[in-house]
Length: 180
Image 1 (tube, one colour):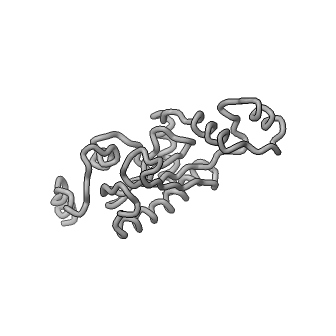
Image 2: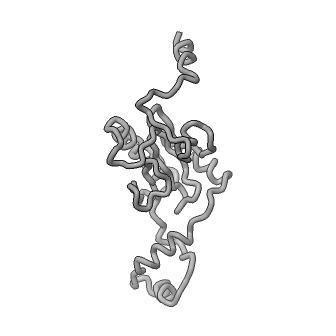
């Protein structure tokens, strides 16, 4: 009986309250049109690895309905996203063995894909070498008491980004899913 009910819903059109944007990369991921490394999925939310991660474990939590602005996201989707952010954040901290995280949601400003999404980004390890060095950074490396400037921190973040490797992603997906 249950399989009959489930099968009756396959291929069914999305409810009119669930908006989709044919040009949106995240809507294409939700529909299965574009590939993504899925960490978590339920009826309202999906969590995927970022394809240009700042650090190992950089994850996006995305509502399955298309809204460009967080301020316009219906409460039931906002609540569902919040629950998944917490659940996935916990799993990521276990998988990468680092409890320090940044959780960010941009609206318009710095929003590369105009579909509500949260970034869960493990914080950098204090032992990570800088991607680039200038005179101040060389001094900073010699004397860790000298703080990095905001510009140096942002440059290090940007320079450290690299495209997600498929094999690394598959290993990380298994590690995160083991903690969900």
